[in-house]
Image (cartoon, rainbow, N blue to C red):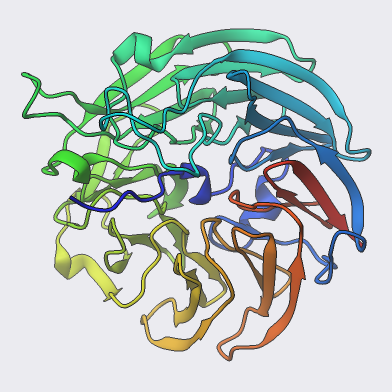
Amino acid sequence: MRPILLAISLLATLRLSAADWPQWRGPEGTGVSNEKNLPIIWHEQRSMVWKCPLPEWGTSTPVISGEAVFVTTHRADDKLLLLKIDKRKGQIVWTQEVGSGTAEREGPKRHPQKVHKFYSPASPSPVTNGKIVVAHFGDGDLAAYDFEGNRLWKRNLQDDYGAYTSWYGHANSPVISGNLVISVCLQDSLADLHDPPIESYVVAHDLNTGDVRWKVARKTKAEKEECDAYTTPLLCTLNGIKQLVVMGGNQLDAYDPATGRQLWFLPGQTGGRTVASPTVGREMIFAVRGLRGALIALKPKPAGELGFRDLAWTYSEGTPDSCSPIVWNELLFTVSDDGVARCFDATTGNLKWKERLKGQYKASPVAADGRIYFLNVDGLATVVSASPRFDKLVENKLDDQTIASPAISDGRILIRGRKTLYCIGK
């Protein structure tokens, strides 16, 4: 039996608004911002623009659009909430109760699920196109609201397609492509208990109405826990083709976001259940095989089945379990859950440096202004230069538990703690 490990998709990639997407995406790669003049020194009494107390608790990353910040949370009375916060003042504008859910921590695996201590039904991150915000929760609730807090539609994916069977709690975040909101469910098939086996799937709903536009089964050769993935899909354009890249179930593949048609697939990425999401840069996709498997770099062909010969490079030592890789210019950065950070040449995979940082890590690093921000679970952020030589600039401490990845907008860094949303700026 494998040890119980974290299963939180928000750690994988940041959810970005349509307005913030160009600055967030930067020249290449998710989690990268073109922001300048960001603060690099802060603590509880310094560089704080505001602090907003949050109903406990959740681990989703905030999503930002203009002057609006959206956060999901799971209150102590099991209410699942979507909050809108004023980005200028740090005040809650409105709170909507989306549904209710629990995070059982006792009992046999799955029926009910026995989730990790860091897991919350408010683990999937919200997503917005600048007019509509969509919230998804680990109980299956998927709901859309306008910016005034009016619910446009709601449905529950467990009601529609069957109970979730991932071992440690469903946590995949949705993405928006055009007028579609796309969700993934990557889960144990329970092949030894169900005939036919329970399927993993990718499904697209109309952003305005919630109607199903397409749904495809995601078939892989994984079995049991290896089927589970808590990753967020990656929207990108490669070979001139817009595609939705999905990692999990020992497979990396891509779909046409408009139709759900599979474009290409790379099977045989055997590892285990997968938490870290893929990222893109240098015309390549970078992903981590599950359960601290190898880091792989792929330059995919336009279509068809791919093989190991299509991999540009792999690296197997000390890879992340929860934290997604990030690309800045020609460099790729990772941090393992036990705090070992690495820098690679993104094209060749050559290791540039390896250094141990303080603490344990679940949040994915973010990059901006020539710096990489590594945030550990105890509120300590280590800022290093995004360079081929290790150059630690500063360490910053907040008095909170920090599982979610930071978000960046308008020269400010938003860090979601267990109790507080922090807005850090000069």
